Length: 143
Image (cartoon, rainbow, N blue to C red; front, top):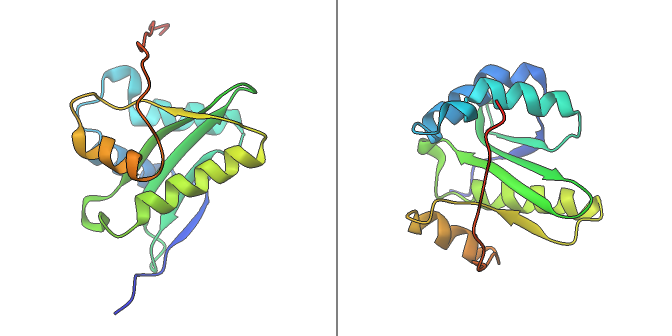
């Protein structure tokens, strides 16, 4: 039996409930400023076409990848695959799709952040060509 059919497309407002449910499952311990509903609504308000969903043969959302490009660097966020669909190449397909979309916008470098303790995720991104860089990530909450 071959791999299940997979379709990757730009997310729409009709996908809201499915994406939020997936993110709540995939990122259960995210801080409140990363609340899935807030993130989803803010990203779709950008209207940049850089939130992608992967759907299965029944059109159910099984994965997401969000990207952003500010004209200098691209960023990759919220790559998530539903637990029952992991290790089937969906995450890889989503990352490649998002990177291709960034490249098409003229992006020359893509950054992402992961928790330093998450070795499995680090290995996943390394298998796709990402490398750890000597940087200190800093942030400031504005809301």
